[in-house]
Length: 207
Image (cartoon, rainbow, N blue to C red; front, side, top):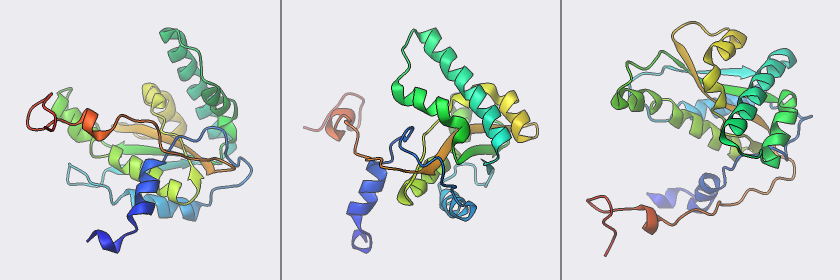
């Protein structure tokens, strides 16, 4: 069946969906119909709960973008300070212009996890995060850069207020999106499969 697809192109999209924080066209709007196309792809993602409780909130107006950007800045600076880390230039570039991003796409859930057990958490978030990743890939395939950001999940009430979210809903990942502008997206330097894969038992590698 693999002959029905161009595996080179598919692997290229999967392997080069990098975070794009600087080389974005902040002046070119991302058309809503294009975002709808990407979300239509995203909702084909697997879900373990047997339902479609994902919801997407697109923010493309100046005021809410500015409010979200300010919260994002506060959270990121707090994390860097707590960890004693110096902020990367790419992260600083993003927060400096976050309010100018053409659109922000929040991947949300209509519902909440049932308890703190690992199985509940895995089942709940495992049924929404694949859609967020599929959305990022669909954007990448259309020349739109994005960044996987989950920092705002720490400020559920504040973001919920800005977005007008009802109770018992959760926002997980926010993708700031814009058409790329001179960005060269390459494969990351990752450990090879042979180094991170075991057979039958943890620690047992291929002989």
